Image (cartoon, rainbow, N blue to C red; front, side):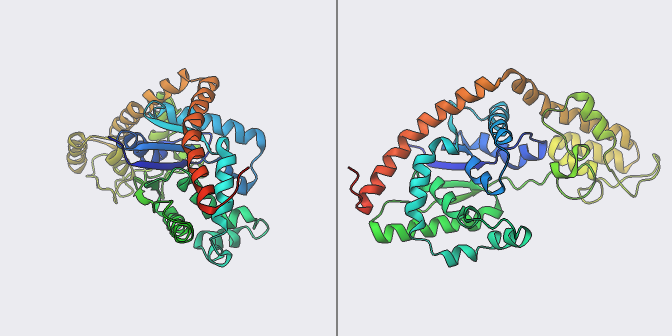
Length: 331
């Protein structure tokens, strides 16, 4: 039976933390079991911020290693680099740009926000980002797109472009529906906001941290601000204690309930509570760390080449159909 097709873009980054795992990677691993899944590393999209070439190449390879180590299986999905299909993506991007008014693109909230923050770097790529995203999606006649809530406006533009193209040239593209990414916002170790690399290494648990590093970071994690002394009862709620909030992601329900009851009765202190959290975090991180160590850069490149070849076959078929629908004489 043919499975529903889905796609998701992955930003090329050098390191993942446990917040990335619960916010994106875990969902991709689960989705590859249910869908005809295609995952691409979005290196073309990243060019709007002019990354250094050597850094971009290394980030692409490291991203592939990270996601395969995290459970993305090249046998169950197609993992490729966006630029490896540049000919097909950029050709389709050109055709789609002809049906998308510039004024509508300039009114997109994400563009207006970035233009305000970076007035010296308002390039066409920034304006045309949603059209390039539409090409990523429509190139495979994708039916589902896994996106964060901040990307829903771009997906709606892709749907609009597909609708307009179909009105002009016939029923070529489906209007893809969203699959909302796991909205888990793993809290920062610093006690406010979500886990983010921009706040410094001490505020997040990297998927490459060893047990010692995890234990040290958790030991310094902000906990219950109202519990000053060990003999005082604690406040083990998501709102009342940052450590307990972290337990809600990394500790099983039965163990978590026991911790909460012991904390409320002052039978367990913050040091012991953090020790249990560190052990549970390490149980999540260690398998990733070991798999990552076994994956070389050459292994990652091989995976991406296989993914490119799998993706290109479908992409070229759709491009041929699009040319015919438009009426282009490709001689």
